[in-house]
Length: 129
Image (cartoon, rainbow, N blue to C red):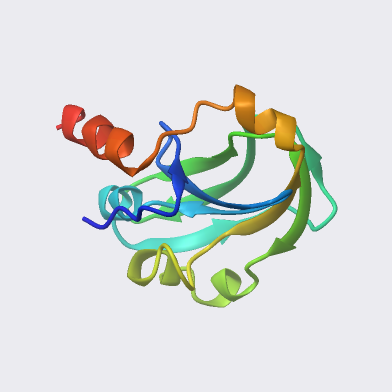
């Protein structure tokens, strides 16, 4: 299982790459392995405004349908349209080609978000068995 040091993680197994007032979000390697083969990804429209911890989309796998959450409020700047045609990219490359959305965030929201670094996330995953 891969956990990258340059990312922040959520308890819902999403990752964030924070670059100033922008963030890229996707699901973690652990999440994709638990979901199994991903067959469909539903993402919001560009320009959508949302609140922290609000569901912004869905991932459908051969096992289940799961919601995608973002830990901070913001506005959708870009979606990964490639996932419409090749949703399995979220399995094969969850941290690179499998990213889901890019958002404009309010930097103050990061202080309130319950984000973990790689060590905290590794412990969190370990505790889940």
